[in-house]
Every structure is written in C-alpha cells, then in structure tokens.
Image 1 (tube, rainbow, N blue to C red):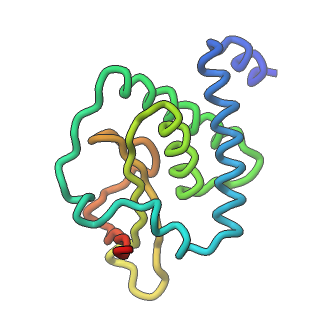
Image 2: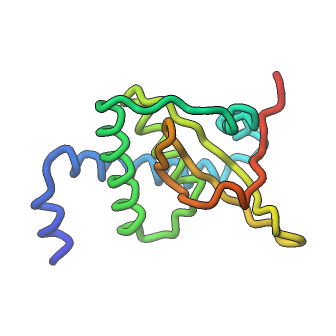
Image 3: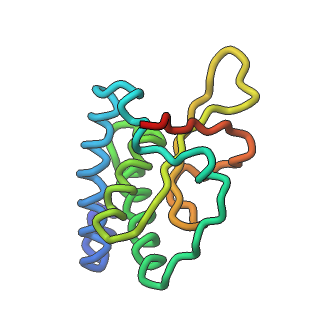
Length: 147
C-alpha cells in the first residue's frame, strides 16, 4: 500500500510522466528484443558528434529533462521485468522528442572488455545525462555509417 499512497500523492505531471515512461519502456523493450541491432544505427550519435561541444539546455529543456529522467527511473524501479540501458535510453529519447528537446543516444562497448563485450547505452541532452550514467572514457562508441 505505501507505493499506492506515494503514487496518489504525486502531482499530475509526475503521474502522467510515469505512465508515459512505463508505456515507452515496454515498447522499447519489445523493439530491442525483436529488432536486430543493425537497425538501431540511425538512432545513435556519430563519433565526431560525440566528441564535440554540446550546447547548454534552456530552462524549459532542463525542466523537461528532470521530469523525464525521474519518470523513467521511477518506471524502471517499479517494472516487473528488467529494463536494461538501451530501452531506458530509447524511452527517454522518445519522451524528450515529444517535448522538443534534442538528445544524443550513445551505444558503446567497454574498452577493457577482452572476450566478453560489455555493451552500454546512454542518453544525453546537451551536457546533461539522462540515462545510463557511466564514465564515457571507458567506452568506445559506435558510429553511424554514412548513408
């Protein structure tokens, strides 16, 4: 019952964000499970783009990022299944796109991984982390192939 009470006490915007995050996370998990990785290549940030200086967020964008990151984290904590980094990054990206906030999705593998590759996905808007907090210097990011 404490979770229901917490949910009932949440402001409407937070509640709607949670519901939106839960729906997008379910959809993202299904897509990641079904669609091969090669089809995600257009969603990721280019390696050159990843090293460039990103513009700071406006006040409105910062507020949207805060609500989305909290909503995704809350939905992940309360999900009945494990939601790894890529569905989290995709769901947050879709949510922020609906709010007019530009994001960059990064997919990478840990540099130190010899045989068993350790893949990771993270999302940033400007210089702000949204999902997948990590030490970026430990990862080699994938780049898009030119069309």
